Each structure stands twice: as C-alpha cells, then as structure tokens.
Image (cartoon, one colour):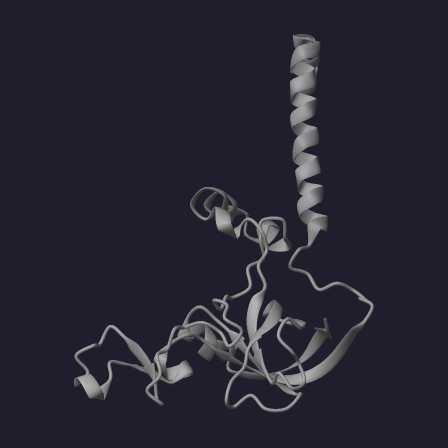
Length: 199
C-alpha cells in the first residue's frame, strides 16, 4: 500500500502541517502579487490621459547620437578624456533638465519577473537598484510637452520628458533613450500610439 505525501504529512503532526501550509500560502500569495502588481503594464482607461500617434526614434549617449567628440582642437586633441559638443562647449552627458538619462526598468513586481523568473536572484542580489520600477528618459519639443510630462510608449514602457533635441520639433515627434547604441538602432524609427499624461 503506497501512501501519498499528504497522508505522510498529516501523520507527522500539526507543527509540520503548519510549516508546509504556511509555505504553500506564501508561494501562492507571492504569485498573486507578482501577477497582479503590473508596475510596468499600461493602465487601462486612465483619466486625463490623451492618446496620440507619434514618430518615436531611439537615441543613446554615444558621440554619434549626441554629436560630441573627444578632445578639442585648441589643445591638439591631447585632452582626449574630455568630451565637447560640436560648438566647443563641454558635454556632461546630462539631459536638458539636468538629470541623468535612463532606460525604463520593469522592477521586481512586474510581469517581466513572471516571464523571466531566472532573473529574480540576479535582480535581488547583484542589482538591488532594479527592485523598483524606473521610468525612461524621453526627448520632446518642450513647447508642446514640458519637462515632467509622463508618456507610455508600447514596446518601450513609461517615460518622462526630461530632454529636448535639435531635431525634435512639433507635437508628433519624440526620442527615446536607450543604454546602448545597438538597442537604439534596433528600435529605429516607429509610429506608435503614445499615451500622454500632462502634469
């Protein structure tokens, strides 16, 4: 006669039962929290949000995307550790609003954790700053979208207007920041339905 694991557990006493049932409850509760937290998901039917079809291009902080070069001809390019714009001004890498540009991160409590569970230990131990979700940096025409305007771009995630660019003109054009040039090139130029939340 073969006993089931549950029957063996029930024979071991109430203390073992409590431990097993509390672990099962904890695992189910964690799964429900991860499933329904949805930090990186787009909210459905948010009040005050406007939707608009926009042309979105990708950019990064490299010299090709941001038009800077190493060294200045005034010093015969011997100060190669410094970065200058084409106009000769220092290039700091900060956005026009003075912040450091970032790519959006889904955070720990998101669908990304369910889709890629092997990344959970890495996020918790090696990269604890990825625990909370982070919005990406968007460059837009500040006449139409002032700094601080939140936008949701399908395929990119949530972002905040923190930068402006010379080629970004009009209400239907935005630039999305990526950490690498390859990701920016892969994004390319797309027409997307952007959800806009004004401050």
